[in-house]
Length: 158
Image (cartoon, rainbow, N blue to C red; front, top):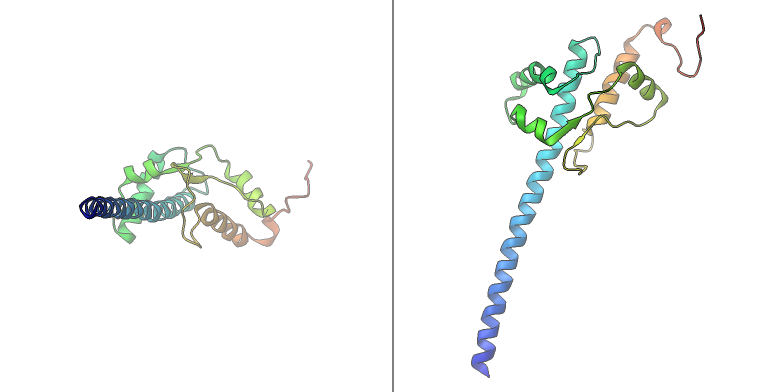
């Protein structure tokens, strides 16, 4: 009986060790993916705002249009991401009308124009990508002269 118990204890200990190693591996992979996703969204939002700034607030139509803005980010922050990895991790809605988006911002409504391909919602507290875009557009709206701003709830007829 002692021999049998000893053998069972060894197999149980071995199974527990394998389970712990597997758990640690999956926990590391999950944390790594979460952190990389959070930074990837932040980068893409920054790249889009650079594009908006450089192109009279015209929304990009494809990843190709963001390549030069990516290069600008790399010059200031280094190269933690390849352009290809960003485009594989993050989805950008290419069918955005910036004028309509500004109205949404002015109304205080939420929108979703940048998100993760894997469906998770990993981001750093102040770096949610849609918030970055919203804050950028809001800052641009506040830079306009007061007489250029039109309230969004008043219709203008000509």
